[in-house]
Length: 233
Image 1 (cartoon, rainbow, N blue to C red):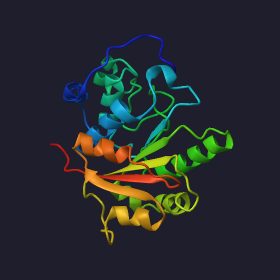
Image 2 (tube, helix red, strand yellow; image 1 turned 180 degrees about the vertical axis):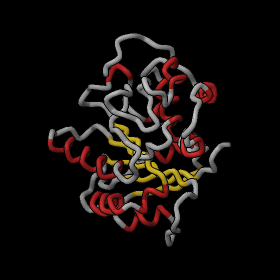
Image 3 (cartoon, rainbow, N blue to C red; image 1 turned 30 degrees about the vertical axis):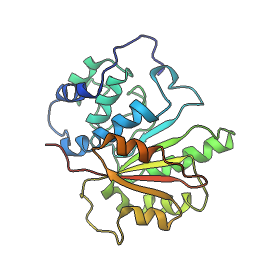
């Protein structure tokens, strides 16, 4: 998946245009747009990965667990030069690599195939353990989940394991757009903290707040950032 040609890079102000190129049914628009700002700050300022380093063992890994609304993910990948924006217009069509759920074998820069909720955090735990087994302690693993995904038992087990295991290479962004069926005593952050994680809750549209939370030190503990958003419509 290594990119060999140079593509133009776009800024945040171009994301709405890139998003508008993706049309058709089953877009899960609110699910996608609620992730846009967090994805942008990660790819623009935090993640150590580029089109030229997608195969490097030293790269950071980003896992989109919230894979049922990938439009913002595709727009950000196109903006950062992972693939040509011309692909966006074919979103969801039969012969397009950009499906309604991302396929890691088709989408340049995608680490996992996703869309069935609850897989991202367990896969991220496995990624960190695999990196440790190879002696790679510098690459960071990020996973983006939705608040409703935390109802999945697989995510509960991943959260419960990662804290006591001290997986400080592991980071998660939870997009809290109030779509979860059940409320949580003390809020989402309290759930992670009870399991031994570092956790911060921020405005999911505030880029500086997101960046500060993403880069906050958390020695010896995995880190969760809960990004509260009202979906753009």
